[in-house]
Image 1 (cartoon, rainbow, N blue to C red):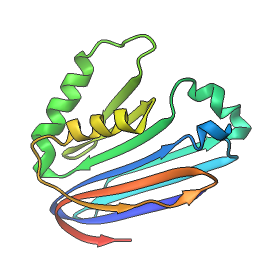
Image 2: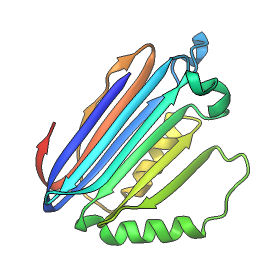
Image 3: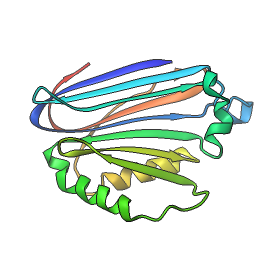
Length: 171
């Protein structure tokens, strides 16, 4: 599976892009049973690249089921724009102070983007756990939801684009 997403925003626009995938049909023994998954995300604001992220999961690098261990959902959330500046600053500071829990059912890593924003990666045991974590990230912000969800080889790759305002191009 290969995917490329690109967003071109006005300088004062805000965007939250959620890209998540599940391990597949676990009950049928198809957990992380694919050869390769590649996704790329590029976000520009006012013509400047503010986020570029890529994920490649390949069975050639070792058995995915062993590498993902207890996790069945992987999500990436890109939060961009001045409307989210304070929320991202709090998120980054809070994550830096959070203790690492051994064998946690949900793990999250947060990275600051060059402009107002953050890139968040979440690995969880269930879609419900990851969904609650994403909702908590967006608490207090009004957003519109645009969903796409292709199904491939039994695994669902769900993309959600949460748009605040000022989106010029989505392609």
